Amino acid sequence: MVTRIKHLFLIAAAVALIATGCVKPAPSTSVMDTPEYHYKNGLKYLDKDQIDDAMKSFDRAIALDPKSPLGYIGKGLAFGKKGDFKAAFDNMDKGKSYDRGIEARIGMIRLYGMQMVKETRKAKDLLMSAESEFKSAKDKDPNNARLYYYMGTAYKVALDFDKSADMFRKVLDLNKDFTAEANAEWAVIQKIQRAAPGTEIGKKIALIDKIDRADVSALFVQEMDLEKLFTKRGPKNYDTGFKAPTETTTQFSPDKTVKMEAATDIADSWLKPSIDTVLKLQVRGLEAGPNHTFEPNKLITKGEFALMLEDILIKVTGDEKLATKYIGATSPFPDVRNDHYAFSSIMTATSRGFLEADKATGEYRPGDSVSGADALLAIREFKNQLKF
Image (cartoon, rainbow, N blue to C red; front, top):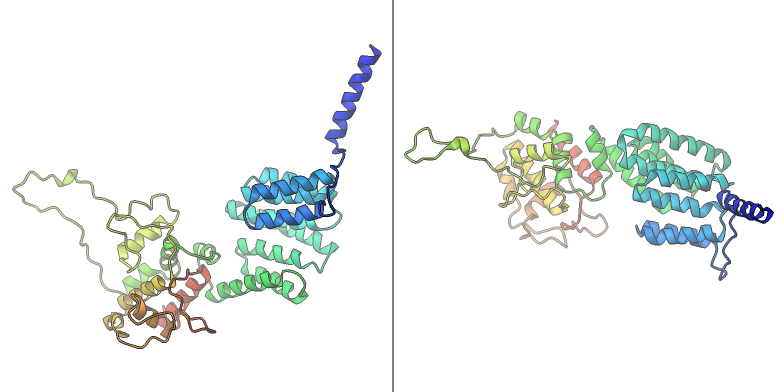
């Protein structure tokens, strides 16, 4: 009986040790086999969205030292990338309990930023939580460039562009880590501030590196106010849809006819109302195809965007000569021939300052994608010139 009680006691003690995290560390196999190495390696995997490989690195970091915060912080970020925020914050909290520095607090700020992207309705509360972590971390380490950088990204996704710019400027002032990343982010924020998007949709699209056909439709409708612009200054719209004849000798029954939608692939798009408006206004380059598909997720190019802007300009001003103004002209761009399908549109867009060629090379790069910030700047200049 005594032996059995002793055995049960040993089992209970073992369970308690496991529960309290008193697990014997795994033996290191080389000088590189450290929590720090595997944490940094895991972060590199995360940057490439190789989440499973990152998890393996973070698990190895934990195995080598269960009381090091690094593996738990890494796993928190990995779960955040997966969208599993419960597991993400559980791991980050555990890392925080072992962390004597601010790495876990930076991790928390990053997690709140990720969650803001996924759960926009909670953005205000999540930003307040991120700011609380930032304040605590700043008190410990006021000159940590990474801290300011990730708080800048949190403000960015929260659409607070002024505070975001302040954080990125602080990184540049410190001139330590993340200067290249902060400089690139600051340049984008400056563009957005100059473009001054006036709608929530415009602010969200401003953050997109490569916009698609749905995005540009929303910018035209929401930021350019295209429907109002066409009504005020553009051509009259006529209803050219099918109407059944009042008299017919055939047995045709119009009340049983089902009219096909102009685009059959936009029903699930959150920007469907804007797409419907653009289709109704018949903007060149944003038509539905012959098979009644709009392809809302197809990225637009700089050549296509110039075509759209020129078409809107012609319809608003009534200046039909713009479409042929540059036929036969010498191309000023080394990468755009004067017989390119969008050459005239590109010339119109660049000569009026809506779009720009590369200042260093003079190339227009018509096949390049368009960022939300650049599209907004073009729309802002378009409206300024029309005084609309």
